[in-house]
Image (cartoon, one colour):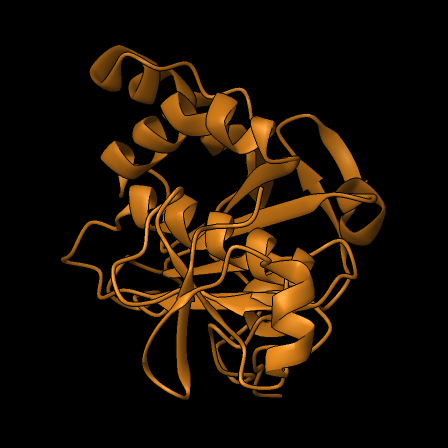
Length: 217
């Protein structure tokens, strides 16, 4: 089943580097980022960089969980390599998916991909390279897929999380290249009268449909 933004994130039970979890229960009332890799001992720089960013995600009430289509025992060896080469200890959970169940559930591998990671290579798992941002309502807020040859930009994932959380709370949208603290755009669905109550100091409006205002606190 193809997944889309605003679909419910499929629930699952799986083994991780910190024991068995139920995904929705693990998310709880916060946010979550699920990001996947085609095989252990690939994407090592991404794993390490994300480990370094974990405190920033925690400030935003967002947990991180990784997935690779290999057994949990293999993940433990990879974690040691990541810390040695990237300088960051991986404390977040890493899901073992040796039967490819989660990868298929999230539409990253086709149903006929088989039922074991044994004998598969990064090339045969190349599509297992998606980042999912999931909200407290368990809905998918972002899907970001990269080719295997291109390292993912987790500063961008953090930026998008800031935007999603801000726009979930306030009736605004964030413009191109927006960063936390920049001006935002009042949604067209908000009338001028409503906007005056929310923003008594006014706004810039180069066009009637483009009302630019300081980021709400």
